[in-house]
Image (cartoon, rainbow, N blue to C red; front, side, top):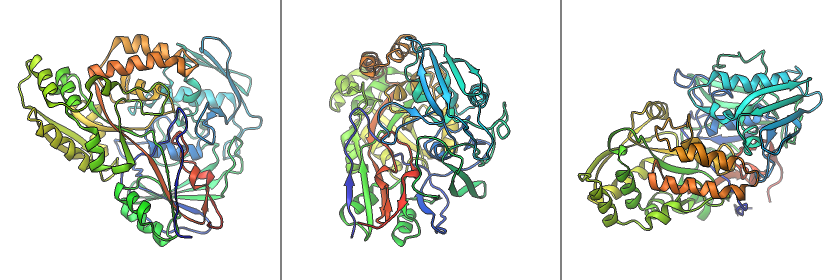
Length: 535
């Protein structure tokens, strides 16, 4: 058969993301019967990023997807990616109180690390406490901030005492940050540098490294794995490429079997309209979002009126149309459409782009125009279209006559450090959630120790609304507080949402399970891939 395009339906209350990522080293060719999967993710160890695969440090989609194959968690998202987390390393987990403050997990019997060493409740406590004590500058430890103490009873029972009600806690235990590691391999108070990973997940890992950068990650089925997953293969290779074009050529030649993140908009359009022979393209809705972040304590971004005027001028529809076409949709909240609690707060407040209203906002605040600023973006983390995106934003703002904008790009390692250090007044960021809940699109940017290092602090959000929504096990009931948060963000504009993306996977037609390669909660599920007869 030639190629088919499969469009997966949206999941009610949940969408599935793909995230454009940074470029890597071009390394081709598959070995033996391994299924070879291409990616443009790059995994580099440096002073800035010393421990890319340590659960206590890793906080990006690429590294998390490596850890999801190798480091087991008590809970995991179900195969579909939708619904509540299910036990994985645990036999069962449950809140034992009505206030969502005491969570008890019982481990599976005879659970073992890939090395054959037994896993006990003490190892789980060690792993969780280690993340909380190291407090890596990636800020990933914030996911476990609602834990007060971790207690063990016997060799299989772990009890989490929370310092505040947190109905989202089971989701957090399903993230790689809560991965179970062997104390023999991971020091208590230091990160494990480099690319070695030892866990109890469905695969073991061997990284092929050149110049401190991974060029190929080989996953081999772990015979000791006990959990909810049923791997359809014995070995998968994750091969890094310099960009989408090189990755696409490798797929068409048969050097790789599957192409995941990040396909370019042009590539997706080609594969949809004039596909290569024997290549299938799978499309599904996505949770990936892009937004502009502000250092609300510095420069022109200090003024709420300036931020509001930008929100009034930027034309999301034009931006998406010019840069991303049908692969993305305008976004009017940090919470994407399809997530329970979403509402279009920015559209409700600002409506369609209106230069006159933006000018009135600036005049009322006695802001002299044009407002000078630099938009910063990363050149190698979110795909090749990012540069064009920021040129469009620049043109929109400058054409209003209210702004004098320049754009400046930097590699991710430089960009991320500068952003966290507060060196950028205005910058572009992407996000895809830690777990599929509105809380994961709000708290990481608005709570204390937020992932942006943002100085923005709203007492109503931090002290009332986030605690209130986390008390509600029924997320529909939580929507009232979640929507209030979104309205405050639209008014204060500490961040300015731009668009949400769809996800795409392309594969040769002898590969099965492609439609499940990326779950609806953004998990890369390499265990779903198999080799069969093309349709």
